[in-house]
Length: 502
Image (cartoon, rainbow, N blue to C red):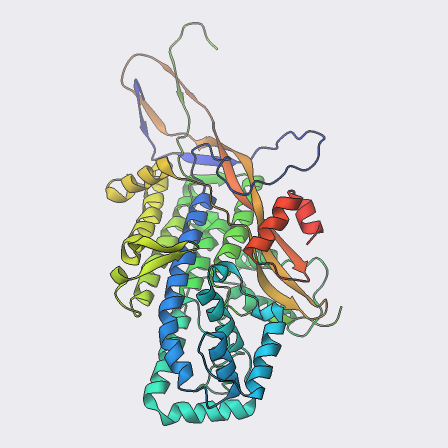
C-alpha cells in the first residue's frame, strides 16, 4: 500500500451479515450451483464442495478396491446362510439361489427405504451392487444364521481374518459399529457388516429411541445446541474413523470463539447463524458420502476534506477466515491416507467420478487436497494477522483460488433417521445455492506506519459476497436419489416450494 505499512498484530476483524432490504416480491429461486454467484471470494462452503466431490470419488474408489476382498469372503460363506447367498447375488456373484435366498433378496429390494442406492452409489452398476449387497448384510441376522456363520468363521482362520480385516477397514474409513449393532465374533453379535455409529445417530437414538418425536424437532439444531452447551463433544477418540474427523472439523463453525482465530474475530448474530447453516450443510454432505455405511436409526413411536491526501485501509480477505476448520480438514485427509494404504499402493489407485476413473493417481490427488486445506489455513491465518503465510502451500492455494470453477452441483438428500410414528424418513437436504453479503470491518484496526508523505489514514469496511448451500431438514415419504432430487429442485425452484412438494 503506497505510503503506508501495516502491522496486523493488533488487528481484530468484525464479520457481519447486514440486514438486507427486501422488496415485496416472491421468494428468490435457488441456483443449482455457485458458479454464477461467486465474485472471486473463496467461502468455506466452496472449499467444502470441492472437498465433497473429491471425497465421493475417493470413497467410491475405496469401495471398488475393497469389494474384491469381500467377494472372496462372501463366496466362501454362501453355503452357510441364505442371507449371505442373497447378498452375494446382489453384489454380482453369479450363483443359484435357494427359495429362502430368493425370498430374502426380493423382500430386501422391495424395502426401498433401506435398499435404494443413494449418493455416488448411483454412478454405475458396480457401485449400486455394492450398496445393496452391504446394506442387506447390515440387517440383523436370524439367530440360526448367527450361530452357523460364527462357527464357519471360527473353523477357517483365514476367512475369520479376512472378515476382521474388512470390519477394521470400515471402522477407520467411516466409524466403528454402533453399540446396538455388534458384529459377529463380538458379545451379542448379530450383524455381518454392521453399520457405523455417528454423533447424530447416537443423539437421536438416545433422545427418542422408543418415544414419539415431537413436532418441530430438528436433529441438526439439537446437535448444535448440545455442542455449545458441552453435553455433546465432537473431539475424535482413538477408535474414531474418518467421518468423526470430518465432523470434528465442523465444530469450529459453531464454537468459533473457542478456536485459535477467535481472538482475532468478532461476529454479529446473523453471521453466526450463517456459520450454523454452514455446519448443517457440510455435515449433510459428509453424511451422504458415507450414506451406505452410516446407521440410519429407526426411532420414535406412533404420534471529505479538500485536496488532503487520504489512504483508505480496508480488511483484505480472499478466503473466509475459518482457520481451524481448514486445518482440521487437512488432518482428516492425512488420516484417511493411512486408512487407504491398507488396500494397496495409492499411486496405483484412481479416484472415481461419474464419468469414470480420474487421470491422476489417488496418491497425487490426496496430496493436492491436503495442501489445499493447509494452504487455506495459512492464507486465512495471514489475513487475520496470526502468522505470515510463506511456502508452497499458500502459493498453491492462491493459484487454485484464482482458477476455481464453482459449477459443481451437490444438491441431494440423505436420510438422518426413520420416524416409526410418522412412518416417514427425516432427511437432510441441500436444495441449491443463494448468496449473502458479508461486511468485514475493523473491530480493532492494524497499526499503520506512514512511510511516505503525510496522508490521512481512513479505516473502511470491505464487502464480500458469500455463496452458500441452502440446507433443510424435512420428513419425506420416499427417498430420492440425486438425479430425482435435482429434477425436483429444478421444477419447484424456491426453498418453500421445493419443500412443500416433497
